[in-house]
Image (cartoon, rainbow, N blue to C red):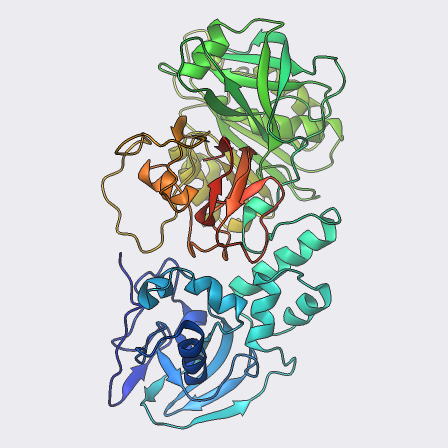
Length: 568
């Protein structure tokens, strides 16, 4: 663990600079630091409160990881935007403290991050307006008050506590000094409140996982294979229908379904997720699956599944979907990564969209170019469409200008010469290197990174703040004897294990299996670990302060009540 949370008191002057204090920097700059989180402040009054609340008498200055331990400046009186002079430096209050598991490590209290929020004593950050020297014992002089007058505790509660009153959010967003990160989070909460169904749970300000529509059904239900169609040399499409042929629930273009197969002789089910590739308004669901060299599920779907077979299917889910807009849209894909963006293209064509639509695709050659005729026909229905197709290794009979536009791979150099619109929304799907490279190229060309959306194959990227990474390992069964509890399936990792009641959380189990995870507070506050719960139910300890979205789970503080399937 790399962290700067362990502090000790110092004497004499220290130079405060724009990003930190000399000798007292941040350990994890990915999660901490920056102009709006330069100096962390905590109060001696809160020290006395926690000594009584926790029954402790062993606190020392810096116990909560703060840079300044101060007398006065309570969270319920200090307002975001207030300005103070200390010694030769001038500061502005920029945001409440961001919850983090490391204060729990320092305190020896695993739930400390949750307690700081629930007891409304988070502390706050200073932005440095004027650099200068400061010293313990100097007076803190208030030199300006923010005109809106919203306290640190009020704004912290707006984001982290249930309720999220619209008038309070609107008022907070009028505070000029509020940091960009908090502003973005509160704007997401406000937008969610405007569009979410009444009574729905989730906090879009904390987790993108809360922005997806609720699942149409819980768990898995049987669907029947109605049709099979070869799309290319290696890709086959399956059309799935309700057993009574009634129309299946609608979904958003770009979302995916999850299949659960139980091949004969297998000790555990095989679970995989596939993007829906057909028209979102169709009565049936279409998935298109590439035959992978050693893919157990793709091999079954290519060689064993027949029309009339029943497959267990979880409802469409996901936050990678086409957003409502009139702005230009870029659809970029490679290989079978075309599936989710093809569904978006269907939706745009069916709506006779007036948006500029750019279809940018890479394939090996014509034999491997799935959906070639289908995508051309859809683009032909859109007045503002553009197409650019690359073949990395065109075959002798492949026709440049007819089958493909250019030889090679989609690259930053190629994108730079196309004159792509800078006010576009971009959707990318394909191999990890493809998405990383092209997303970086789009951002460098001037496209707002918030408008660049990616959908990864397999497990997503891990987020383990401050943890010193070791050698990467593929997901595996945990070490030691097998558990005796219900099964836990990690759908994207293709792994099913038995729960061990000795473990404290599903997050801990995932870490023991080297399943990539994302987390920060580890106590159910920040929602970084929020994950789609495809099947089953969980129990919480501690209870999260704000509930995850319907159909999701906070894996950092939950355990399975029965067999569960997680989108990890």
